[in-house]
Length: 505
Ligand code: FRU
Image (cartoon, rainbow, N blue to C red; front, side, top):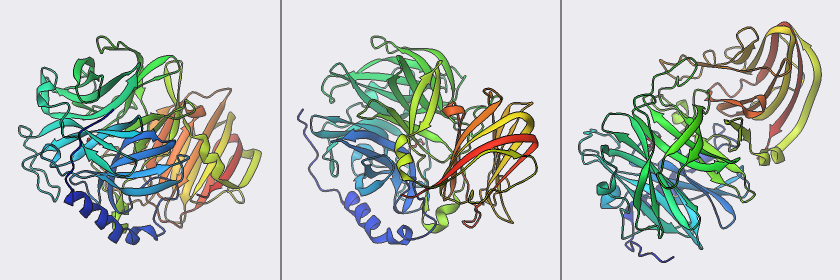
């Protein structure tokens, strides 16, 4: 496929690349970096973008503002990897340098077509926004359109035809200023994309488009519409086939919580069902929140060469301070997770490649735990824990992590209420957060009286995968780096088997 590309040099891109080069050393050598989670070289990172396989390597882009540790006019940062764990930084890929994306290259996706790497993103224009990143947010004047850039894995050029989905092509009864985050895919020689929208009734919906040549797009239909049930705007949609089902994931904004769900204000949900490619309708048979932690947003997936569907998300929630900003960076990605649909539910399993980085295994089998105990060698700050807790004789079990005299982060399970809880309220994290109060809960079913957990700890995060990935809880924890102890306790007698590996990347 041939495209006509914008040829001119981009001062904004050159400036961003130079800034990163000149300033990354401030961040690169400090102990406060993540060990195995993607983070910015310097500055601010939000959503994963363009997660794709190009010429046999994984590429991941991200919403990026290099110049500060807060959100600003969005660029696309770029990393690549052969195994989803060890990532290499590449130069900034996109900068807001055209009339149609003057105030930001917002979220989007990527695919390989022939030998080209195609990026599809949202051009954001806000006439009231200065380049310091402050927005006067006069919704009437913001415009969002969909654009393409074509590249070779390092350098990307925008199309002269941009925007390829313009304001005139926004579905009827939709906001012109909330129309973003295209996710592109190919099926039977046709290209499709889904885009997040806000209906004029002030609730979220998702539009689907199709194209034979990537440049001319036609509206197909509305996949689904919140009808005031699930948030004001549906951001970052993604659609894929998995285990004989279609799956839609997306991130609804401004959503009311219910029971244990949607406590972060901005949530992420999955729908399992069937997509009708003729009408664009998504017929859902089930849905739920994707992750029950405090920091998980804007997930995006890609198809691995071996057929696995892999998801990665921004390990952060909006509207919170990010204490690592004092070290020159803010925001990271989750561990990539393999997805599976089982009984119409979405399961998440850490990608198997992480197991190649396990070192120095220490294991204990069938340890009776009642009062608080520590186990020799089970401690640390960059590790994986795999454990099984048998509740036959126990009512309650707790695991304290990232612990020292001053702080601790607690994972606990109560058999009577069947609630798995993650609590960072005593982690001395420095997160100023009104709601939820540094704590989240999820109802979890024991299997044969057992709770299975895999827990990944990195410098400032804890990811919990319970019951083989049926439930996940992902959160940042900015405790002191010397908080390394791990303690087990139970009411009654829990029988615990545990393995610990250091993760060395
Ligand atoms: C989601 C989001 C997207 C948007 C991007 C801007 O976190 O709000 O909808 O494209 O962030 O950075």
